[in-house]
Length: 218
Image 1 (spheres, rainbow, N blue to C red):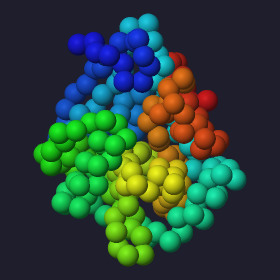
Image 2: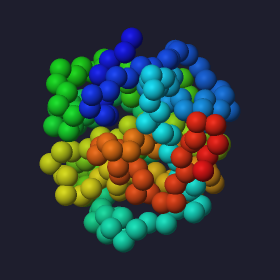
Image 3: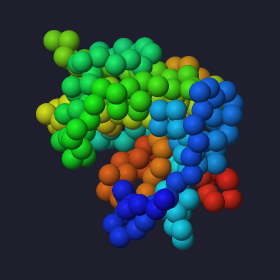
Image 4: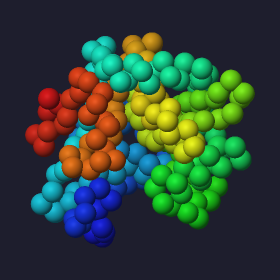
């Protein structure tokens, strides 16, 4: 059913979706290339009446060139240690996620079960990036799906008290660097919505490509 659009005021959104216990990497990539995204075991695509504002955006990894401000963010966070592993739930990660969801998005009442369904359950190959400071304190976590042709950002959350670090920007750059080190040609950032402030950051990673309604990336 239609519901209030989470990106643009005064509009209604609608999705079509399906669940899957397992998804072959090649098929998953084909789905992303027609505008599908993943949340837990659900694959979804916006099909809003009279609106195609949700535009899939990706960065060609070998061509990525950080801006001056992005390079400053990178240097600001060089004290962090990044580890990569399989997604898992822990009290430490859930507490960080809960504080982020409440502070950044105004969502309260999140449960461990919600977290697990959203960020741990996955029918595709998925990795979790954890970022810690010199004292070992967890500051941010990123979840990405991995295939031969793409690294797809699923979600990123961070300590709201560390806003000055611009951890979202740093995390995206770290994920692009991870893709480059493994010869993965594209980094998918999900939907870009022109006019939505929360989505503007995605177009700052350049050069980027957007998926047209005819199925072509330009």
